[in-house]
Image 1 (tube, rainbow, N blue to C red):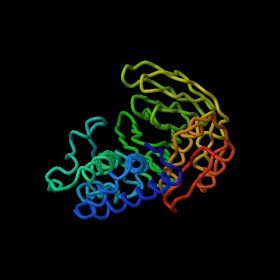
Image 2: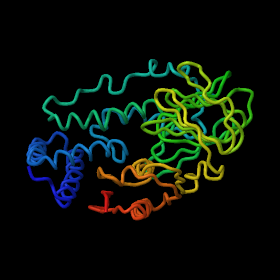
Image 3: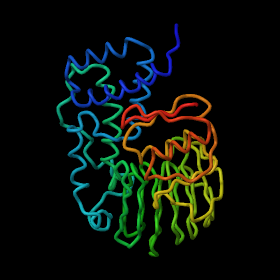
Image 4: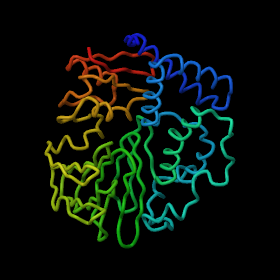
Length: 348
């Protein structure tokens, strides 16, 4: 079997993007689905391009998912509310962790997707629509692609959300609790008799009068302190991961609960709020993952040496294409722009 050339792969990537758009616009059109099936089955390079493009497109959450009418209205009540009305102290709220049971499940009572949908369209509904629907159902605030969102809570504390990030907010007479559902957030906490806690996956961070950030990646939950002190615990076991994390210190906790501690200049912690991405000994693929929510389009990284190279630097989040150009040029790679929506990073 002849291996596909670079031009074949780039053409397949561009065509896969066109099919994502076409299937989103006409998911129940039989002719469109038939032409897509023929295109995908014609060559292995097309099947690989489709799988990779669909996976990354789902991850960045750029466009409205297929069949969004089945869930979009679930979030309208919450998104229409002014920011000042978001904190739980302003309206009755179920206890944190019980809210999902009290709410109606997304799409309940709605007409099911037509049985005639092809396997591809059905897969897209699951991959693109379902996770975003659940997220919107749980979240009190979501930042869009390329949007830096800042909120003031009822107690005067401030939250900044990086693009694509989402949080739930539960204030009660006993505590102030934030759930980081996706992305990363910066917290500047006001003094209050009630403890201020942030839960992200299985990591719980308790503020002790400080400003700090919490971020989620595919492999870890990261807490970094700009100033002041926080305590970091394992929410599953109650084990203390770090009793005192102070300015310039950070800890990354993997899914198994293993912690890796590090340090960074305090002024670079939360630098994304000023449009800068500060990177310290991270792989190119990790940096690209951090750039994706800021980029209005799809970024593909070809398998190869470039993806695993370790980098340290500061990149401009307002010019993601330029940032990726600088990132690849310094390490012998290249960026190919197929369409205004699609960038491909590969070895030089």
